Image (tube, rainbow, N blue to C red):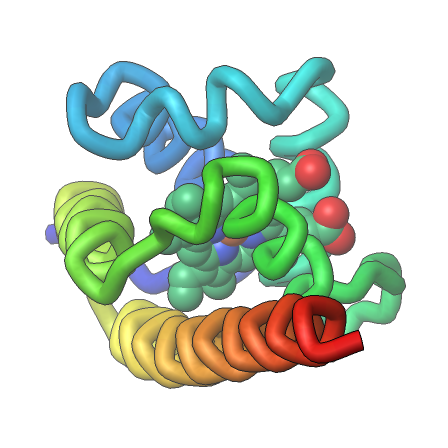
Length: 139
Ligand code: HEM
């Protein structure tokens, strides 16, 4: 029987396995492979991020919303709900392959919720861009 996610090592295992799938995914791998220079540092950061989220251990001090606005800009505003859907499918799949229990369900729920928040911020940011360029053409 699988056990629940209980330690930072468990999270690290989850994160390594998940990004292994992400990097080799035909549809969304390139967003990550073309952006992330240092994968070891990225995986460490993401383990901190989820450790903060799940265990309340304050080691991550980044701004994930801003990070995704920048990714959307880098890729010419092409990040769609479908891309988030593919990300979430891989997240659920990896969680279920490795673990089972309450924390698994918590991480599914929280990632889904964050996805909607990130997407809303991305769409709002695009509107600002549109009104910026409209303002510029009016001048
Ligand atoms: C709900 C789903 C997601 C969560 C929880 C999540 C979480 C994160 C976090 C915490 C970071 C680190 C931010 C920082 O540097 O402090 C990050 C970075 C990144 N995310 Fe996501 N992410 C999600 C979905 C996506 C999707 C769908 C994409 C597809 C384009 C994506 C692409 C990236 C990339 C390329 C980076 C690296 C940014 C950089 O280092 O400059 N993420 N993500």
